[in-house]
Image 1 (cartoon, rainbow, N blue to C red):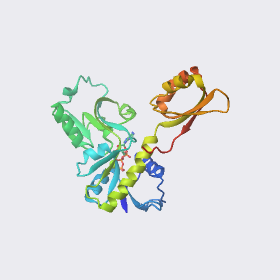
Image 2: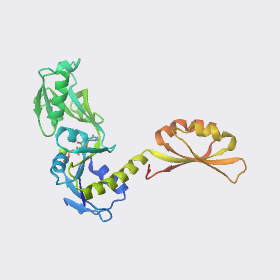
Image 3: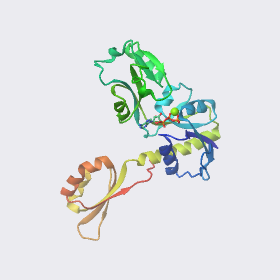
Image 4: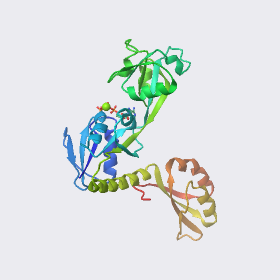
Length: 283
Ligand code: ATP
Ligand code: MG
C-alpha cells in the first residue's frame, strides 16, 4: 500500500483529486476525514495542510505527496522531486507600494520585506547582492506595507490582482512554480513498484492534456497538403471514404496549435472536421 499526501483544502486540492480520478483510481471521502483508501488501486490518501507535506514525506509518514514547488523548495527537505504536474501554476514575486519610484533590485537595499518564504527570498537577495531585512509572517502578507509592518512583500502571485488591490506593484519575479509530485527516498521494493504503476498512469493522463484527436474528410489530391499543415503530425491515418476520390484523415494534435491552422485546412479542401477529446496517451 502506497501512501499519498494531498492538500486537504486549498488551491491544490481540486486538481490533485481530479488527477487521481483521471488515473482511474476511486475512493470515497467522508467529509472532514484525514484518511481514505482507494478501492481499485493499492493506495491510501492523507489529507493535510500543504506546508506539512514535504516534512511528512521526508519522515516517511507519507510515501509521496503533491505540493507546489514553492513549498517544496522553501521547506528544504531530503525528498525526491518525481514529476511536474502542470497545474497550480503561480510565481513568487516581490511587490512594493505603487507610489515607490522603483528603478531596480538595488532599491531594496536596507528595506524590510514581509514574506512567508524566507528561504527562497533570502537565496534570491543573496544572489543579487542585496541586503534587505526579511520579516517572516505566516499569512496576509500583502497587507504588511499598508499597516507599516514592512516596505515591501514577497508573496505568491498568479494574476497580480491581490497585489493591486493592496496598493502594491509587482517589481521582481523570483521563482516560477507548479504542482509537483515528491517522494520519499526510502521506499520499499513493494512501494516502489506501486509508484511505478502510478507514474505510468499519471504520465498517460498528462500526455493527453491539451491534445485532441482530429478527423476530417478531404479530396485525395489534397491529402499531402493537409497532412503537411497538421502541426506535429508524423504519420496520420488515411482511409478511403465510400465517396469516390475522398479520404478520411485522422491524427492527434495539440489543441492550441490546431486552432492556428484551421483556416488553412479548410482552404486546402478539408471538410467535416471533427475534434474529439483524448483521455490518455500511452507512449
Ligand atoms: P494550507 O491550508 O494547506 O496551508 P495554503 O493557504 O498554504 O493552504 P493555498 O492558497 O491553497 O495554500 O495554495 C496552495 C498552493 O497552490 C501554493 O503553495 C501554490 O503552489 C499554489 N497557488 C497559490 N496561489 C495560487 C494561485 N493564485 N494560482 C495558482 N496556484 C496557486
Ligand atoms: Mg499552506
